[in-house]
Image (cartoon, rainbow, N blue to C red):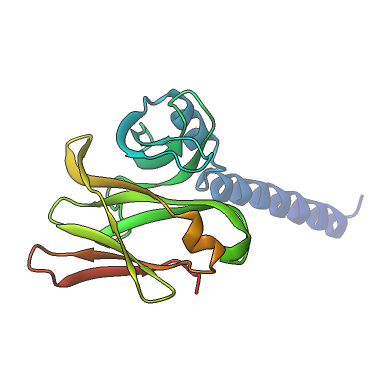
Length: 194
């Protein structure tokens, strides 16, 4: 084998090894979600709020979970042992820098008149005095807040089921709004509806 060919093969081997090492380093810096999934499966759930039953829809609980991967999860479910929906944020920013964070959950749609059941649930900072939902017709829906501890942190938890009469008339939630004790608005997040 010629010296030129050996150098070419050596260069290819070095490049292949370098690419493999670089791929391993990049892959190790990304979590495919399996560690969070495992942590969710193992961490206990704590019921922090309730969503009332309505017109055939079951009562639901709002649950929080603090995982060993450094996440705060908020779920809605019939029970802690049942299937649940919701999501997780990092423990250092559980509300994504907002005074209130929520999940809108619905069955049916996408238009409000086609939704069979809809709920909103989440957490607010402890200093939030009230949370209300702005509807597409300009009216408001008051949400009950309940003190909730997640790890060492204090929040206010909430859950709300939308009235079928609102949904059937096409009146959907536009925003979830947080208020201070003075009545001043201190945060607003839109739902993407209306």
